Image (tube, rainbow, N blue to C red; front, side, top):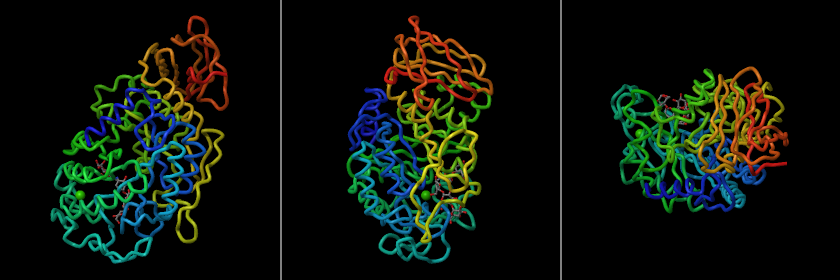
Length: 473
Ligand code: ARE
Ligand code: CA
């Protein structure tokens, strides 16, 4: 697996960001992924065709596709009842059709794999597809003996994140904890993941990886057919014995540390820190998946989110411009209360996505409205910018106060302004003279680069101006 991960990374690095990856789908791609949180399969399929493929986005991370408990909150998806590909996001047929459509659009499919646990339900019930289950009984899959009972607290729940044994053998919020070290459990998990592979799934997010020993994850990943892409959720928290670095053998990791730093940098205006992340103790760049927010952090408010409007957009643009790691965008629905607002029909199935119209960052979103922040002009513009500059070195760096700007050689230049006041400045660049489009503004607003490579522009408050050689009027 390590070799495969390195091969994929090498493919990305060698050709820079605009390389064709080793994923099944063909076509020009960036190294950028996107989490489409709780988007149903039909909606993901059309987004691949209409937006993601044309924008050069490499892959979509879907919400968990397996049968789950019945109930209204979004998090029912994280309580597996069986491994039938049948959920409120769609049927197996719809899932298959999504994979095919996305591949045709050149977009790979990465699935959120919930493999640490089953449900957290103390009473028996039936899953979304009608399968009966008990807390420690899943017909045809698992019985009592296949679960951990850590015996370290009265409820068997995790009580101490400073103890690896507690974190890995006790129950995460009452979720029946699979004995992932056993042959039987690993075999059932491999059957599920290989079923998805047979449909064409390109890779997996390993949910709650921290709650399984890295060696268990490695053994499970080893059982997956072919060369799936792997990205693991191991939340970085100070003082804990289990850290993302422990899991690099099985694949990439999400770097939560950078998401937290982005909040700090947006406050202090120290955007230039992104160019020098060496001292922060982040995962190695080539195995780090960077992000501004995900479905958990937009709820626990530990990161920026769509609610932060222009600041959120600025952080996303900064991440997309950075050579550290590979970004994963996030797109979900508006909510005020964690458990509420997922738009569903009378049966509880998630309805098709209709994106909110984007006019202004000051816009408020009604609960249940699909924000579609990935369609904001700054985000799509910077995905294109990232593809255009590839692996070119950072040049012509400039920073003053809350502003920060840099070029990527003769291919592109970007200026950020993390303040309430517009910034007028003449930027020195290594770009060829001529007219360029500011790709982060809607339409093409023209920027004129002079014979000496400089251009003068007003960078909006909490905004950016970005130009590159592939986007000229
Ligand atoms: C729900 C209810 C619970 C109930 C349970 C069982 O909220 O009250 O007991 O069901 O019935 C999601 C939701 C949970 C939900 C769960 C199951 O967020 O609220 O529980 O689904 O339906 C830790 C883990 C990390 C995990 C976060 C949330 O380490 O892996 O907690 N993140 C993933 C997903 C979640 C998902 C799960 C795992 C479970 O992204 O969306 O939960 O599949 C420190 C530590 C972190 C720790 C964090 C929070 O920062 O360093 O490791 O994260 O605290 O405790
Ligand atoms: Ca566990």
